[in-house]
Image (tube, rainbow, N blue to C red; front, side, top):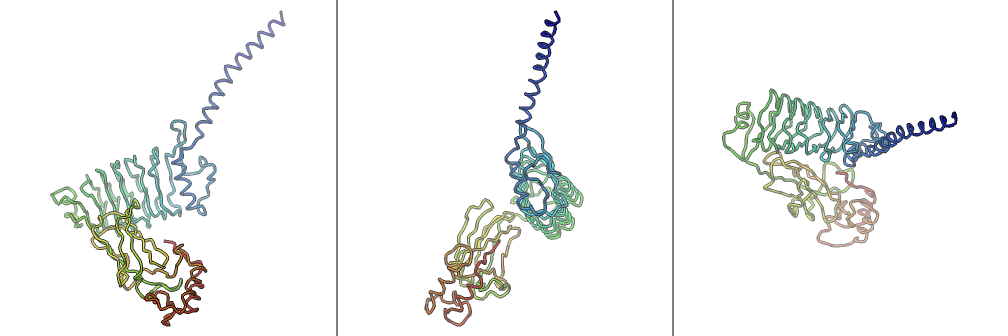
Amino acid sequence: MKAKKKIWVKILICFVTILIVIPLLSLSVFAGETKNINSNDLAVIEKIYNDNSEILNWDIKNPLSIENIKWDVFDNNYCLTEIDLSGTEIVGEIDLSDCTHLTDYSFANTNIKSIIFPMDMINIPLGSFEGCSNLEYINIPVNVETIENSAFKNCSNLKTVIIYSYVDILSNAFSGCISLECVTNAVYIDSIGRNAFANCSNLVFYDEDPADSYIKNYAQSMNYGFSSNMVSNVTGYVSIMNTANEKNSHGKPYKLGFAYLYDERDVLIKKQQLDEEGKFFFEKLSIGSKYRIVLDGEFAIKRNKYFVASKTDNYISTKEKSIPLITCDFNKDDTITIVDAETLYSKMGSRDEDMELYDLNGDSGISASDAGIIYATVGFSYDD
């Protein structure tokens, strides 16, 4: 009888164990599934870390443990929902465009160079970029409804804001943006709070419709500019820099070369040959848009120059302070190498009509000393 009771007790224990263990195993499997991290969000964090690995004390192999970053589970994946890097010395270009669950963020008082907002974000948070003195260009995406208080306050180098949605701009949002010159598509602005553009003395609101509107009346009442002219141009000059240490005097214009104009999607718009003064000129640009100019001399290391068409006339450089192209990159690998020096050495005694581009020491001939100048710059490469 006792033996039968023991058997039933064992059976009962096994049954209870099964009832307990199976759910726990299921929970364990589910928990394992939730350990997947959204790849787009992880890429954002990894790029920030790679740009700032000497600054950020992060265990990048365990991103869920990083302080000031919050993750929540959506469809069994950890997704980035909050990030606060305010007050740090981080740099770089922040691209949040693929973050689909990010609800709050702050990069206030950092050194970031640019920001691309989450496409689904409906408001730019309170003080989120206050004091970001390296920001020059802001593109407000189509779903944003509110730019909250002090969002870009004291961004002292901010020049251009492009708006693509009907938006309310709250108090002090751009206060202290002393370099702000251009707000494009301004007709989309529904309301502007107190001191939103305080100390923006050079500000002009741009929109193609010159008809009476809220923003036009606001601009007039606050003594800001308003313009329906939405096109612009850019001018610049290029010249030769013979040595890596040469900063101010760049010698002759670089006449053997081209300037290429790209839009912010990196699509080539125009190509233009430099003239006899090393000048380039591109017209009919869209005010408020961001562009890249590539300057590529026939025998020079190419330069990249980014600019925002924030006013009618934009100058990348003047004739007196032209952009230097260091010459004699014969193999076009964007670095001065021994091969380049040997190439010039092989031209000694040449009477080529473009000899002046190779006569680095100005003695009216190509000699070993010219090759020596190139040897002295071996390893030089621009980092634009």
